Image 1 (tube, rainbow, N blue to C red):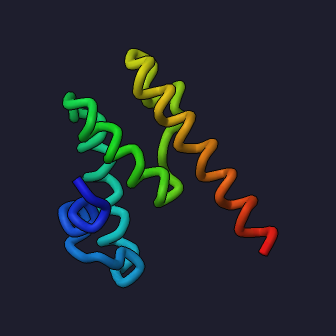
Image 2: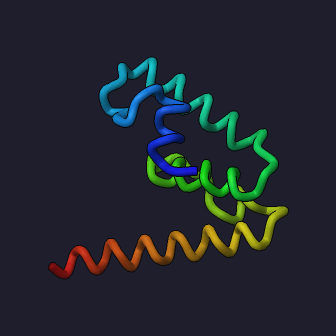
Length: 91
């Protein structure tokens, strides 16, 4: 599952910033519902990553409280993103 596919599925576009505020809020609501009902671990993690990219993701400890492997993966994802952000600031 790739980011573009998820964006098109939930937002109907590759560019959520092109949506009206109501359309965006509706899509965010659907994304949160999708995350909440998803049971397949890989899809659940992909939805969390999209939510993280949109700055709406719950903390890994909350999102994956009953899934220690996914929590660890999400923590590592955030650590890597933080390192990349700091690396970009040094340029």
